[in-house]
Amino acid sequence: MTTPKETCPAQALLKQLSGKWKPEIFRLAVNGPLRFSRLLREIEGANKQTLSVALRELEEIGLLEKVIVRQKPLHIEYHLTPYGASVVPIFKQLERLG
Image (cartoon, rainbow, N blue to C red):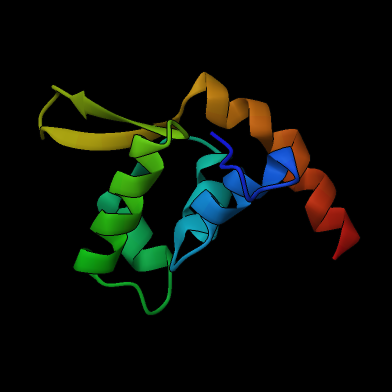
């Protein structure tokens, strides 16, 4: 995932997590499955469009997985992937530094 200009292996991941709402979504996903409506309520200032883009990008880089729950009412949840779970300890360390 690193490009030739990146000197630190973490640089690519940090770039992918930068942007509006992605760090906050990732932080919330650590605590369990997320639903879109919950994210809209919990992330102050978020709107449907920017939230959808951020979720899609987190899916594309393999940190989140979109799961369709076929119960009534039908809904979608976002879960951390095994890769996403593997980077949680790194971010917990970063939080302690701040």
